[in-house]
Image 1 (cartoon, one colour):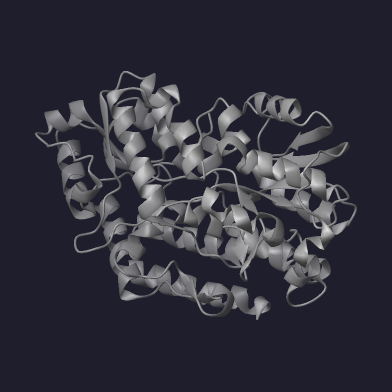
Image 2: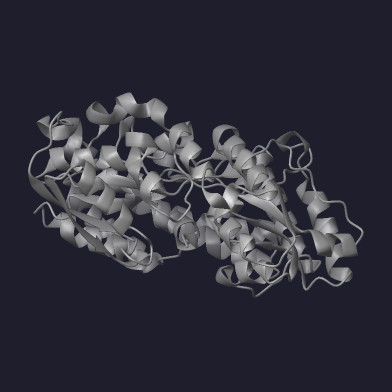
Length: 446
């Protein structure tokens, strides 16, 4: 399963944020470390393979995450390049990279980069400038996926995966409540307002839960709510270092969010990791979750259906997006071999990572998505509907998370505000308090 990939927006805490801030000057040597690794350092993607060993750090285990098949395929395509692969837990990734790259020894050569943190990696001199070598492949990726690796008009990482969200429903529970299933057409989306009403009805008719989110209280999943109403992604100004989540649109969106729990449409206290099992067990009428739920549903007894993520009345559709990219260590001693690995994983044959990994994971580009949609989980009627929705959303409604060097503090503080709202706090008060906290936390970047 790859649920941990796109549900891994874990709060690392302000202590980790402070540690990262202290490393900023040490790693970059100035206010903008991006210049320290610019122009590619004279390397290119070679036409013939060198004989080399590259070290790669990932958050995916070789066996349990089925990465061995990917590395075997790379070795077959590039036999003179050996990959020394190491996986670390997501919570340890940032500290591992901070320590190793700061040593300037070139270990690792390539690493998994969490997309909303790429700006910080570039600013701190921890990523190689890939612009000259890879900007020509821009059309191989969905625009938002490519843009996730851009900072100050330069490319610092290549996307290997993407994500989106869908609305799933339990037909039996809807029928019991006398509710009509939502349309699977992106042009006929259910509204959030109607979903809340129907979720209450479904619970009254016997569903344990009216509706669920795959990621309660997390910015990744909730960001599109205010954006649909015309709000920003949460920050503006130079470097996106001015908090911007106390607008009318943000307050309206999260007043609605808080009301879900006050009305009993959605449960308080449920953890994100409990959400999917509850829906798969047939306990919830609706859930908003990513396509990684489909394999579980295919093995369940739930009579399920799928529809596009809802939109607010009078709003414009917007959906979450983003996943993982690959970045290169600016101190790598094997940049050409590393570049071959980057290209093979993200571009060649639609992306070797997508083509040869058995776990279904949404690709970051059109060619890779064709491969992704050929996976057996999309073979059934609802799977085919899901594929069409996923393809549409990633091409038309996807909105990246805010790109800022202060992302860790941003996510930590805002997620806590969401949790407070879920537990009964007034939306405006919680967002005002969060904006005050973040303004203080971001002073060190200005």
